[in-house]
Length: 227
Ligand code: 5RP
Image (cartoon, rainbow, N blue to C red; front, top):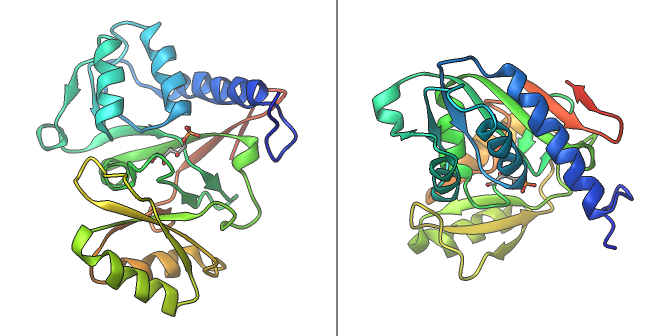
């Protein structure tokens, strides 16, 4: 059986994802409009939500994939423009540190995720413990770019010491492209996010440090750690 970098098997990783997703249900207010992220951990959260019909009034979704899952679970999906402030946003991440800075966008939904996170009063992030790190950077940083600016942005990132890989063939829900970046110094995630955001042609940087998670629920072997 495949093993993760923490030594957990894939089955154990998914059990941890399911555990933190289940724990997130405790933060959901009855009758509220909930922001919902994207990914397999969120998939488990939607499964948990489906066991509580009528708990939420509706959801705001961060991707077409999540909208489909929500509708299949009988949950109405609203346009963020109709809703205004979202009380709570639940989403996964690809990597997190204990300051609750995140790398997101492995699934390519980073732009809508950042928008819903920005609209949310509270952001609860659900991850398995293999994603918690002392410093960010092991997971390549996804950057969504306007297609015609891909080479321009790539050169700007490489001038800063980053190594880039174009996620060839992948198109975001917004019709854009993604480059995955490694090798950038991540000792000050908010400063790096600000710097990369300023490159012309960048739509969204998958660093969530200027608006970090408010709470991290980390699925472990034994249960869920709250940070
Ligand atoms: C999608 C994301 C996801 O939150 C991230 O990729 C984690 O996914 P998973 O829960 O499948 O491990 O940022 O854009």
